[in-house]
Amino acid sequence: MSASPAGSDGDRNGPDAAAESGRQLERTALSWNRTLVALAGCAALLIRDGLGESGPPAVVLGGLVMVVAATIAVAVQRAYRRPGAGRARHSLFGGRAVPVLVTGLVVFMAVAAIALAVREIAAG
Image 1 (tube, rainbow, N blue to C red):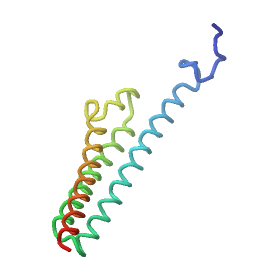
Image 2 (image 1 turned 120 degrees about the vertical axis):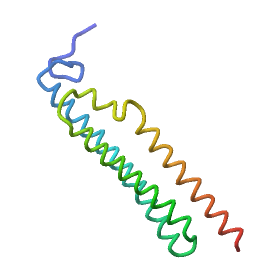
Image 3 (image 1 turned 180 degrees about the horizontal axis):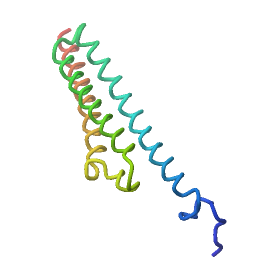
Image 4 (image 1 turned 90 degrees about the vertical axis):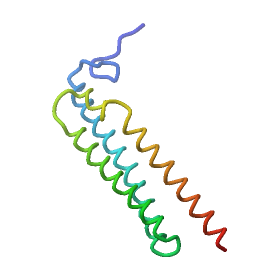
């Protein structure tokens, strides 16, 4: 088994290890932001549809998703910009709460969109 050269991906204690850890945290925060922006965009479309054809339930559901997505986005930014123990930042909200919340929001949006589509189809 051969040793990897200093500073390569296999060297976790090299001079670039701290910088790479910072870049990894930044990439993770940016990834969460992209996901939440996409979710907020879908919620905005739901609100727009609610102002037209779907009515108040769509506006309320879209608004609720927007508020929760914005809250998660603020929490993600604060957690990943906090100075200190790099690995502790990965345990945002004490573990897996953010992935569970975002997955729940996506499922909620999908169910809401399907319910509104079925309602519109049934209405004629």
